[in-house]
Image 1: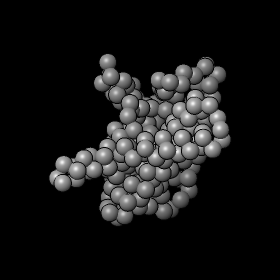
Image 2: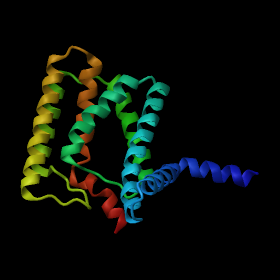
Image 3: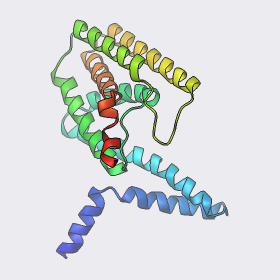
Image 4: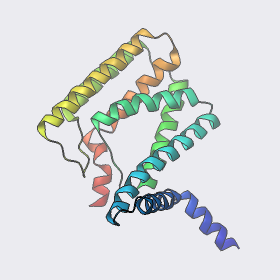
Length: 206
């Protein structure tokens, strides 16, 4: 009995149910559309992304309630993701590692956003540093998705534009939660593009 409980807990904690759900959904879609077996793998990776994102969002909201930082953790995530899409950064070689480190990072940054206020002078310095980081290192290419020179220029330009928009929002709002959460989300998105951080998992795989 104890072995079954341990096995079940291990299954849950390693988030293997995401792979199972993705496989079952991909198999059902491929068979219902009467397509060749090769499409199942395409659907599988697509469902992994969808179910993985839903799973992380549910866990993120749960942590937000537990630590009473739901507004901060959601706003940090929004500002982070809006930059991350175009700037790139650290990637992990497994969904489980990515999920747990992401959840830990967002929880810590959400707590910082709640309890440590950054004034406008510090905020301006932080945004300036992130501008420099974007000019220097963005975009960070995904190992499986190399970019052309035109794409790199496009991604860098959009990242700079989004950073500018976030700074303007920070300046215009009087809401401390919004101001602080934006800054901490921007900090996190900038940190993961610095080479010593963005290459961490790559170095672990060598």
